[in-house]
Length: 342
Image 1 (spheres, one colour):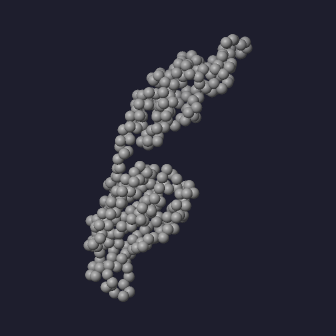
Image 2 (tube, rainbow, N blue to C red):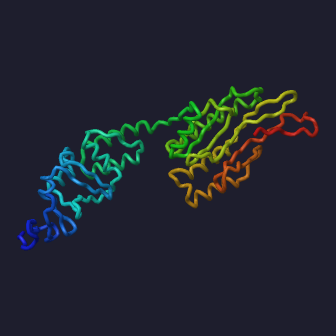
């Protein structure tokens, strides 16, 4: 039931009392848009007769046309047609109680009929939820098709090969995951190898492949065959180097120097587990700090030496673990010292 109320200034339209869903509320006609003094009103013919619409989606303000919102028969089209009840503030903004993070993407899809989707699977699923809420069928299908296509590729384990130092720096700094890099360059050696070095080098490569499969999707594994080290593992979190395990050493045989490659499997696996605290930005938590400190304070295993570079305070230091440099035979002279390669 509705009735006209007397009053109002000269030349102004009188306020109209209309039946709303929750009872009776008073509203005025301002610039062709119904503005209600209550909590919510039916948009009615105000938006239907307007050319432009002002939308406030979770604090994100968008200005678009009624024609754009009517391109798909969904919630936004119903709002402009007056078939859905919405809240309109005193300034004429249609208030939608949704997160406005992805609404611009929904709006661009209505404008263009297509839109680039986020690379992150999580963000893509968020876009899908918004498309389902606004009932934009074209965007829903676009998201589902992309998710299905990506699920095929994400089942694969892809390990990038570094081509330059600039590319390596960019990949590490932009990656949100922890990073493990194996530097493997057998030809970078001016001495002969010991008898077990080739076997240990292959074991390091095999462990790298196994870790890549085990932590696929959680850790980014990359390989470098152009660096200066023969066999060296580097571990990164939040864009900076956390630890390094060097597996090569210079040793003395009876008559000549030789290069020895070690396989510190336990230490490599430990450092790989340590950088998992940087997964999803969890390094700031108390558990992450405790695990990091335990890894830094753990004593090196047999045949290993550990040094910490003073690149910063606390956990900003880089753990550099080098295998000990062994003497191959007991024929070395008295007082001859083991040589360590820094």
